[in-house]
Image (tube, rainbow, N blue to C red; front, side, top):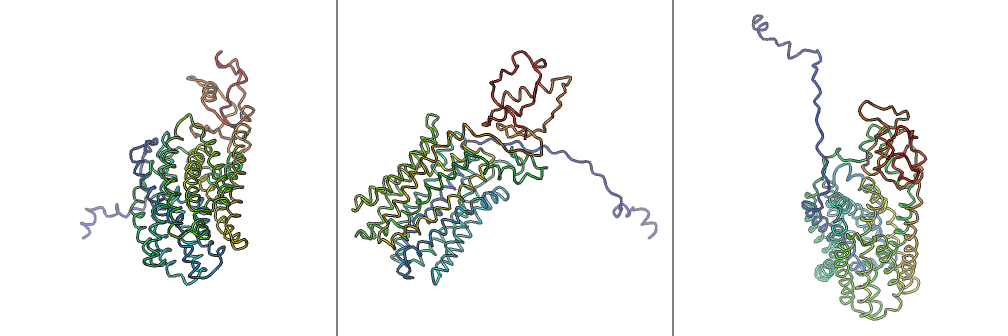
Length: 514
C-alpha cells in the first residue's frame, strides 16, 4: 500500500498551495446599432398585442361602471376610483418598471406583469365589495399593467431610429384597437355571463401576453451598452448621475409639467362617456358605439401620424402642441353636444386629436432626453402622468354634485389648453438651458458618443500626436446644448495649434468639465 501511495501522487489533488491561473482577456461583443427593422418588427408586433390586451382592458373599463354601480350601490365618484387607481399605478410604477427592465430584462418584467394581471383579475371577479376591488383591480392590476406595458416602449426605442415614430405609432395604436375590440367583447360577456365571469375570461386571454413576452430579445448583451452609467461603473455616483440630473433639466421639467396638465382628463371619456350618453337618453348599446368610433379613429390616426412624424419636415413638438389644443377644444364643447350623432362625432374627432399627443410621448421623451436617459425619463414621465387617475373621480364628483359630467369635461379641456401654452416654452428652454451640474469625478463627457474620459489639466504633447491636438479635434466634433461649456474648456495656447485650428471665439462648445 505504501508503494501504491508513492507511485500515485495523491497529494497533488489536495495541495493547499494556490494555483495561479493566468487571466483570460475577453473582448466584449460589439455593440449592435438599432436595426430599424428586422427583429424590431417582431418587437413591435408583440408590444402591439400587449397594448391591445392591457391598455385596451383599462380603456374599456367604462362598460363595467354601470354593472358596478348596480352591484354595490355606491356613488359615481367612489365607483370611478376602481379604474382610476389602476390607471394611477400604471404611471406611478413607471420608474420602478423602467429600473427593473434595465436590471433584469424586458422579457422577464413583461411576463411577470402579465402573470400579475392574470392573478389580480381572477381575484377581482370574487370581490365582495369596492374596497376589495380597490386592492385587486386598482393596486395589483395597475402594478402588473405597468410591468407589462413599460418594457415594450423601451424596446421599441432601442430597435428603431429613423422609423421610431412609425413603430411607436403602430404600438400605441394597440391601445386604441384594444378599446375598439374589448368594448364590444366585455359588453357581450357582461350581458351573457355577468361582469364577474367576464373578468375570468379576460384573465385567460392574458396567456397571449405571456407568450409574446418571450420575443423581447435584448439588442445588446447586458453590460456592453455605450452608456454613461456603464462608463462610470467604478464611481460611487453611478446610480444617481442620470436619475437626479433629469430633475435639473429645465426642458424635462417643462415637458413633464405640460403633459401632467393635459393628462388630467385623459381617462375621463374612457370611464364616463358611456354613462354620460345614457344620462342623455341614449341606450347603453348605442352609447358603446361612441367608444367604438373613438377607438377606430384613434387606432388609424396613431399609425398615420406615426408615419408622418418620421418626416424631417415635421416639427414633432409643434405637432404635439396642436394635438393637445385639439383635445382641449373638444372637451370644452361637450356641454353643447346633446344628441347621439353629435357624441359620435365627438368620439371620431377625439380619436384623431388625441393620437398626435399619445404616440409622441415616448418619441419626444427620447428626442429631448436622449437614449441614455430614456428608461428613467420615461418612468418619471409616467409617474407625473399619474395625475390622470384623478380625472375620472373628479368628473364623477362633479356628476354627484351637479347631476352632469359637463363640468368635469370643461375643467379637463381648460387644463389641456393651458398645457399647450406650457409646452410652447420648450424651444426657449432648449436655447437658454445651461449645464450647472458639477461632479467630484473631474471627467469629460462627450454628449454625442456618451463616452467619458478623465480630465487632464496639464496637457503634455506626445511623440506621435500632441494631447492638445487631440483635445482640439475632440472639441471640434462634439456639440452641447450648454452655453456655459465655453468657459470651462481648457485654455490651449494658439502657438501650439495649427493655423486653421486657432479658436476664433465663436466655435461650438464641445466638452464639459464636471
